[in-house]
Image 1: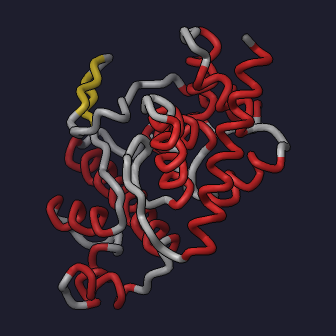
Image 2: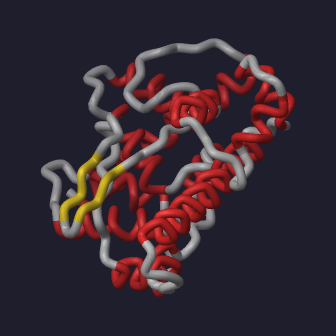
Length: 240
């Protein structure tokens, strides 16, 4: 998802009037938020009319929500995002202090200097993946599970390629986080089924659900899950 250069935009001084400055900030927020909402809907393969039906509203209401020229109620935006399995992460910044408002234990919003984003761009990866790699490098883990997962998922191994194709909408670091939760389960069979569910995109990692869908696809997913766990065991054995 493309992110506009908010900081550069803010640095363009257009007025000393606080009301004008506030209006500019609101304009930018609406532009970026509505752009993200449209991208999420398109990614889900839904038209405005189809999403409106899911929300129980008229298509005009969805069109209004996706327009940067309209004012938006927070509750309506959250309802829109919830139907697309998305969350709105919010933080309030005052000076050097950053206060996280969103109730999301999986993600922490942090104030990352622009220089870090530049390094990520030079490395040819997203800022998120750049930070995750730094964490892996400077925060050694006792069992090295996450490091082994990242090593495998970023490789050209056929199993890794199939996993990335299955979860094309997720970053490698996000996939690694979900799979790591699966490996925390004590029983090997539970690990296999949890990994299968992650590959199916049906539940968060670590879930112990044995969903039944298309039989051929179910068999293919279980086979891929077993191969992934075997490859991971090989990598951890070599590095140990």
